[in-house]
Length: 119
Length: 426
Image (tube, rainbow over all chains, first blue to last red; front, side, top):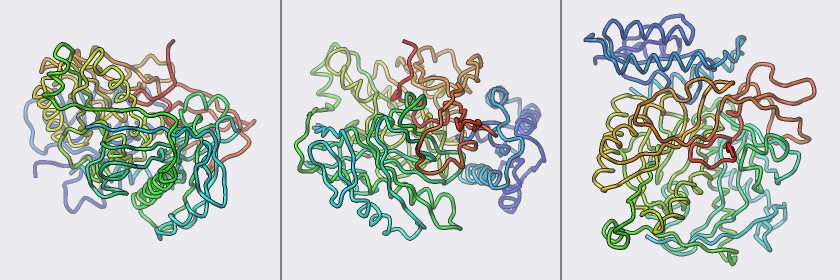
């Protein structure tokens, strides 16, 4: 399968790591989008939407995206999607700088559901 | 396909020993609703309450809103494939308890449910401050998966709406309206000089707790297809999602889809309302390509001159919206988008997360980031425990005087992307 998952969600790392190649990074929501942009510039293509789910950027700390393992010429559509996602991210405030654990788990769950059902 | 809708006007709702509709009053025995809940072992407790227009009442966290309806003539029953058998609906006669609604409330995923205020500033933003609401507050048992809770609460809401709708079976409606969709050939012959207009509705389908069901089928697993608009009036499309409250298409919105009603209003006068198409909003980019290719292909196949395109949600669906718009326009079919905006609190940021030069006719339902203050109200149905966590809320947003500061995102139906809302620049 020509895909791997880029994520900052421990649940995705722990639950999907057996079946998929997972690139886990301890980053903020915005930082993981920027990491995806770097990978796109290296020639990987996005396979899932960077703003999946109704949860807004900065409301959730977690984001998982699937990208191609293989590299080709720069995919402009992937670049456009990730740039738009970063721009969208910057207009939302960070809602819960001190997020309670229960809420954190809800966000981990939603992100995990979205990526696991998409693949 | 022809459907007569008989509207029974409900101007009050009251508890009673007997559930019935009499002289425009909906009487409900709460035990009847609890009996429906007892069919599902996932509930730890279910309480039933009433909220009327103008009362000092706040309902939260709201999951879904459903209008009670019953089929009195013709094949099938309401919510086909979910509550009734899967027979094709949309013809015959349907009775509606207009002015009433079932509201389901209770925590599922804390941050994805909404607020309905029955009076005060918040009431101006939600259409459900004007309905007589039977509110079912559901607590599910500990240890259940979130999506299992969602399904239990969804099903109870639909069952309760079907139960209440049944009370209107033998009541004489206050008003009757007839909605008819012609076949392609009939429409072309009858209205040869009117523009052929379609409606393309995008359904939320991003995954668990982001689902919409069509005749009981998860829209995520469907190809773009055709549905008769009158089928939708009989509950063929059901909301199964926990998404931001302001632009969630509740089941009530689907039953009363304003795009369908407005197109029917103009049908035979200024346009020929030919067809309704439904398509999805999946997360996987290849799914988006397949679905939007398919939608554009059908618009061309149906020889449409123009379409209205509506979406549900923000971000990921914006990409489907733009892909649909672009590809349909490329087929020579004029496209008008109905959406809402996430334009930042001051309204100056780009409204959608995607864009294209062909998206040159857009109707907005309002800016979901706009901030409002909701006054303290006397009674809360449900709990205020989540008003900071819900989409549109934020840390410490309850003031000393009990008022709550939120973005419009938090208000159920405030910026609805089918245009079923109250915001206007007029």
